[in-house]
Length: 468
Image (cartoon, rainbow, N blue to C red; front, side, top):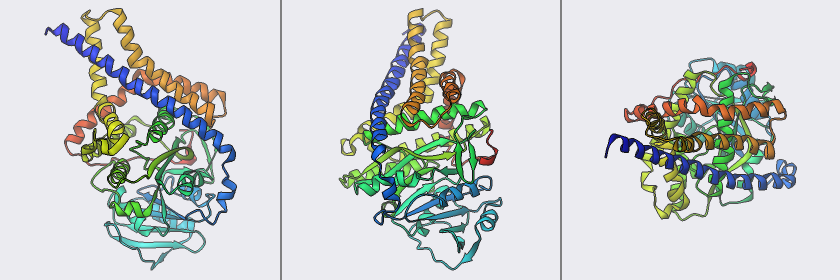
């Protein structure tokens, strides 16, 4: 084959790849639109008032791992303590923070050292002190640093209730979020875990641990991430949940049955993708046991989080996320294409392997081959147009569709100016931002192959400073 023939073949292969990727995503969007429409109609008869005072709603332990979270921890804990739910406790795990996380929590919530014992059902780093409050239903577990997974396991050991809700320390929950995420587990014993939507708080007004005014950010980088989060959660996870092939519940906001997590050994400490790995392991266990239990996503129990506002911090985050994805897929590679694992093995795993794991490399090779083909005059205008539509045009349509889905069904952004701004960013992200993410994720493959297990510092500015 000549060089020209090879370049042409690569371009046609990449074109088919983009068509397959975006075609699959369009199918997920169609499924998601139906599911979210049904969810919005059911909300009219939600019965949340009755659930909020019900004696039958199982008690929940909120597990909050914290490492150097002094910027946001007070606002987050206040939002947790003010949740509308019959019975719950807040368990904060200080994972060897080097800042004033412990001091601030003790000062703001009147925490005192306690002799409360922890049942060590999972292996963790040593616990130094347990603090409790005389006025609030919370405890603070101060332990030696062992990483996020280790902190979560310590929190699970300290939890006293049958349901656990794992939440990032930089998250603010809406008042009824716990009711909404718990409802599938209250209504059915066949639900093993539930994920809720995570939204971007940058730009929003936060008062007393509550998001009081939902707005976009005056800065570009957080707005690009708003579009990403809408696309990933509203379209992606809603669709995967409907197909019973959900492989990830965000570590920022997910609910599990405590006994199930303990039974499978808790979170793994030797991966940076502990949230996806646990969910994939639960899916594997459920199908090996021929269980009818499902792992589901609910599109509107909202958790608000501060996203990176600098390229340096965002790059670290995306590098870690991709290494976590690769680690999980490698660890559970035996599930790939196995009918015994149902839609997880036949749809979920193949999608994440061929479109998410190696996708960044294929995308970057595609751009290079396309530019080379144009430069050498190998590609005609018809192919160039088809390639642009498949690689960029469909991506724009998908991003705009995510914004429209938000406006038509959930309507969190009440200003037309915010919707216009998000629509503009849905277009602009395809011209530079998306390619930069692909580059970071491609480099993450190299760092993964070098066995890099580092977390990377996630610097916080704090909710009270949004503007950012």
